[in-house]
Structures are given as structure tokens and as C-alpha cells.
Image 1 (cartoon, rainbow, N blue to C red):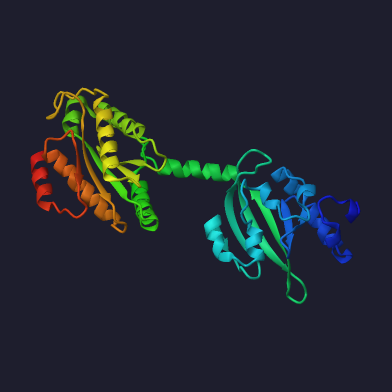
Image 2 (image 1 turned 90 degrees about the vertical axis):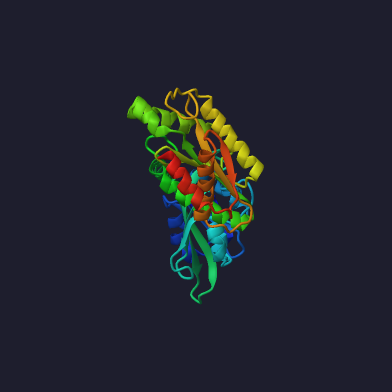
Length: 343
């Protein structure tokens, strides 16, 4: 096939001395496209057509190649290499990492919506500059690999590793990591951050009466009730340890925090799990300590301590209730008093 008949290559940009290299790139099994210095596509190989569902005819000689990957216009990795905007890679791509940026190129990973295919793919992307004999940049080549299955498997494994085996909620390690992340987000966005610490009232007496297997069933039922009350995707429920749970509520004000706390408390009470030895009720109940940082910059450990202090107050005041603690309110003496009360 002559260059003029090849639909994947712009004819005017095919010097005869580069014919073999161009033909080789055209038939590579790796999806590949090349941008000229004017940010227009000069090569869009057949593998790239198969991966994206977009024909070479639709993009050759244009700067519209982004439409193959995204619904809205944004730079592809090749664009950032072409214009040397390397500082934008970490903002636009997941797991972006450079390896000899100026000489070899960059690599990154990203979810792409693939409009022509009607599905999302997770792509591993490499983009590298091409120079002429005088060292002038003449093009950028980008190669793509579909690693969607690997990413989904990785996400599943990470999800399993982050979950508590008994209750299905997120585990303590995930909670600790996420609280640090949300605290940083609160500073960056200048949003409040709320935290609930939740404890099942008189759970040791429940286990003593009914045994550990019913105790585990009780923990699972409570966990499901807690999770079922959280409606926003960013809210996170975790098993903090034993019969204690924690809930992170990003961008939530005091009134909303107490609303969620009371909704959780009422949902567990509505389960009507019989607890004849409870010192509070004839059914399983919760005590909940709430705190909130309206001023960004409070350390995650201080948030936990403040919510913990509120939890101890809820127990001291009779259990089966939600209590809000001010972030700067010390209560070491109260903690000691409640521990003595619970002993």
C-alpha cells in the first residue's frame, strides 16, 4: 500500500527515507499515535483504531484526538510532553511517573471514558519525544496499553485488604489512612471535618449472656445498620476495634453531624436486638461521641481524641445517646471517671 493509500498516516508528513519506520509503526500491535509539533495527529495506527473505536480518517491532521479518550477537552500525555508541561502530569493522571523526562519521555496511568466504545478503560500510557539530527523536537509518540482487568483485580484485592473480615466495614488501618487524607483535604478545601466514635452499650454483658457467635452476629447487624444510614459517597464507616466503630463525615457542619449520629443510634435501636442484661434498655443500643473541626488544620489524632472524649461523656450521662464535644475541650478526668464506671 502506498502512503497516499494508507488511511492511518498523513501523506504530506511522510519523507521517503522514513517509509520503513512509518510502515513499522503503522502495523505495530501496540496502539500508537504520533503528534507533530503543531499538536496535530500524523500517525494513528490500526491498533489504536481497534482500542479506541476511532478511525484514523477521523483524527489525522487534526488536534481532536482527545475525543477518542474523554468527553471533555483536556490534554493527553503526548500534549504535555510536546509542550513540556510536566508539572501537570500528577494533576491529570493517576500514578504518573517520569523516567528521564527530557530524553525518553514519561509514563502514567488513567481511566479513560472512550466515548466511541461507550465504556471506561484503564490505560497505561507512555509518551516520548522524537528529535531530528540537530536535536530539535519534531514529534511525540504515545503508546497505550489496556490494563483494565489488572486494575479491577488490584482494586478488588485492595478493597478486601481494607475491609474488616467480620463486619464488612472498612478496617482500622484504612480508617487511619483515610482520616489523614480527609484532614489534608479539609485544609486544602477549607471545609469542616466531622468524626463519630460509636460504641455498643454493655457489649461485654451481651457476649457473656449469649455467647461469642451471637455476639458476632450482633456486630454484623450493627455494622450494616451504620452503613445503611450513610447516604453520601464520601462518608466512611469503619470498625475501629472490638465493639467500637467510627464514621468520617467530610464537609459536615455540627447540625448535620448530630443528625447523622442520631440517625445511626435510632437505626440500631430499631433492630430490636434483645439484650436482657443491658444496663440501659432491653435491646442493643449505642453511645456516640461526635466532634467536628470547623477550622482546618486540626491533627487527625486530636479529632479522634475529641470524639473519644464525647463518647465517654455519652456513657457517663447514661448511654444510648449522642454527645458533641468541642475540639478544644479536655476531659482526662472524665475519661478516668467513666472507665471506673464501666469497670
